[in-house]
Length: 213
Image 1 (cartoon, rainbow, N blue to C red):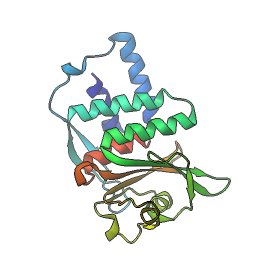
Image 2 (cartoon, one colour):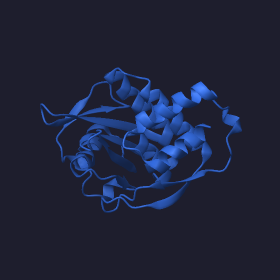
Image 3 (cartoon, rainbow, N blue to C red):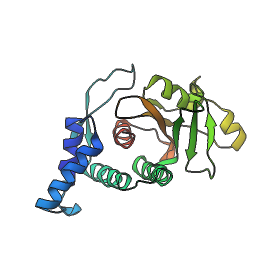
Image 4 (cartoon, rainbow, N blue to C red):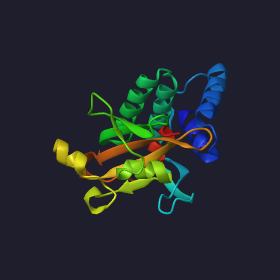
């Protein structure tokens, strides 16, 4: 049942995914209640993802395993259930860490008053600020395009100063804009270093993209 709800979400691509899911969830709760996870089919669904290559929306079919769809549904519910902004940020970070199996996740929120992006990360106790256009996250904020980089040190947009200051080594990176209901960019969600020195794939883009909506 959860799979069918999320498949409907990615198929219909509503303007407001949160309202869409909440509406469906309420209707099903009233009518039938939840389905057990072990009732879900083992085969993945077929859905469409965005090709980040040229900034335009393209369609290509990607097979998404059912357990990924269920995990996305649970993550979306957890985020939507939280109404306190600071706690919402922490939940988005933690859900993204588990969802795409990243070593670190950063969430940048745009402060219009100071024209800066405020960074909150899974490995940081205090936020820091960067300028729009600074590094890959700042570039994604300005362009509104998804960036998926298998090797950051081969990309001229990557700002190495953070690694040099902390001793951390960034390898792979998936970064995408967070847009409000009017389509304006209001932040950036970024996952760093896929588990086992891997790279982020189409399924990671799809799942993280729905958390960023």
